[in-house]
Amino acid sequence: MTRDDVTSAGPHGLGAADWYEMIDDFIPVASMMHVVLIPRRARGTSLHINTQAAVAATGGRLSSLAYAKRAYVDESQITENHRPTAPDLLREVYASCLQHMDKAMNQLQANGPRPPTLGEFAGSVALERLRPSFKSAHLLYRIGHWIDADTVARLILEQIAWASAIPRIDAEDELRSIRSSRAVTGLSRLWPQAGRLYGELSEAAHLNLRQHHRFVGHLDHRTTITVRELALEHAVSVLLALSDMFVIVWEATQAPFLNGQFTAGSWFDDTYRVDSRRPFLQVIASHRAAAATHARDSSSG
Image (cartoon, rainbow, N blue to C red; front, side, top):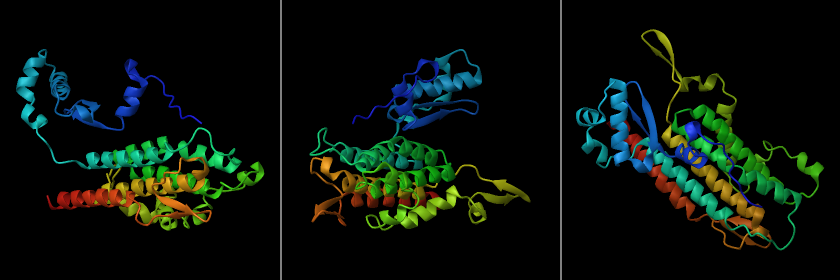
């Protein structure tokens, strides 16, 4: 099987790959009236400086870009090294998740020792299709739409659970009878925290009164609704957990078609056993510590 990424051209002729990748990793360049998104890798470069000048000139209706740069752009502030922001940290987590999953999926061999069962094939399709779902969850968390992000994360978990339940099935009728939401219980045998995480994510998917305190408040005797909140520690924990779970299920269900290099567990007596000391746990701990430190520094500052 091959994985093809088909996207249409972006606005104003921007190449499909350009805009699709940029929304993963951008920084805003803004004035009171305008905002431009540029790739994060351009931070501190002449592109960043000139874009800031152009935004200032446009907002101030100035005819001279050079004057706007001299009068309104502090180049030293743009080029100096800044402490990572919450979006920076979240992007690093997302990159670690993709790297972890891609490393596992790249072990897939073109020609396995036997034809896959219907369940093995369907599970592979379901798992490989989740990459854009991870992208969507990351972007929603980044822009502060945690309720919507949790709903997408719940979809990811359900698909992982469904893939974990079907590898031995080779009859279409039986395969159709497997409900993804009910497969979460079986997934807990491989990843014990699956049920707890599923319950937490379901709180957002089935939003009820118990969750209203997260976004409803009061100011000057009026009810307020918070529509954006970058819940960094929560987002970091969810994305890392789903990535860890993804690789475990990939290895457990696609083992006959992998080249034998496992990163999350091993096979013994026809049983996949998760490694309690798998390397990705160190990655999880490092990212969670960075997010906790950022949250602590932000609250104290």
